[in-house]
Length: 426
Image 1 (spheres, helix red, strand yellow):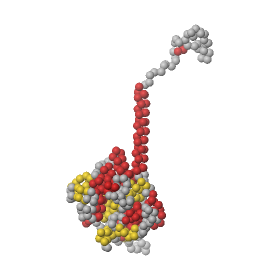
Image 2: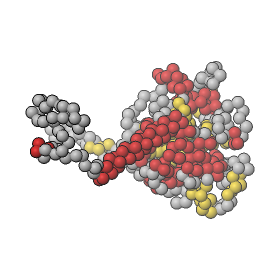
Image 3: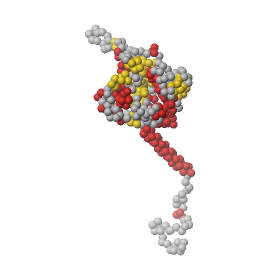
Image 4: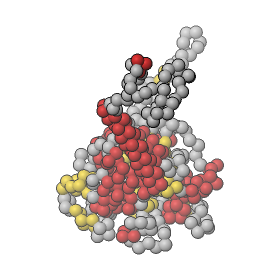
């Protein structure tokens, strides 16, 4: 046998067949057919799978980038942790372990990005423009925000100052604590005043507040009379209107040209505005809409300084998630019971025993009610002090005694305040 060139070839001894001559033979009938063109449907499915994988990876990458961006915005207050650890033995012991007490501090510092337009930076000094102790009940069915007046006369302990020296212990107005020793000094002052353990703290500045309000497209308020406060850069007509961030900041800070100019009315206005802001965030789908949630989180995290227990996006998310289950009417705002200070009517002092009983209820995680109607406000007497809360029976005929029968508990005391469901316009 020869190949096509006429060269002799040897038989294929391994297969037992003659070498192929190129023409089909009887043994070629059962051979596998030549490969057919690729199935178009299978080809299309492969491209869909590849495209889906790319989209998933891109989305995951973008999500991770956004997470890292927001997480990196938050500033951690390590100085406060050092000071609080030093005085740990003086701090109150936590009572209701599943409850949370978070101190919210609004700083009037003019340092930092965006804050210089509210006044000159005098070397980084700061005071607490607003201080609120937020108590989250252990069952997360209520949240109570208690404002502490900036002019309340309190005992301020000796605190570490930014320059490394220490302030002297003094009896002074409350907002001096933040100026003297920052968040740690404010926390120690609050704990000394209330005997409530502060679990976490947050400090937010002017610029951050305006950015958050802008991120939710403003907050609706109702104003009874026209407002003009030059110092707060605020001028508003009377009536219902939506405030942007700058207007909102002026609205919660104003003391002149609005109401009677007292800090009492200013705190009431702050509480009502925060309630309206909470209501806006809850009602317009911000928490469930990533496109709307990201700007709010970005604005909030850029302006926040927190302790190490709340300095990550996951920590803040868990806090927001736990707050989301609280009914709006159970998100309550009130101010610690106070009156003009006897030695200076421009300062405040606590009203007792109401303030003591309010602190006790928050410390023990007991219910608190609020009402804007002063006729509904009770003295803050605790049901533990009610003479009718426990009744005992006399001896039985066998000389024994029946166990004490518990009567109906007294209703939770009512303090003057408002809730998030009321909003600013009722």
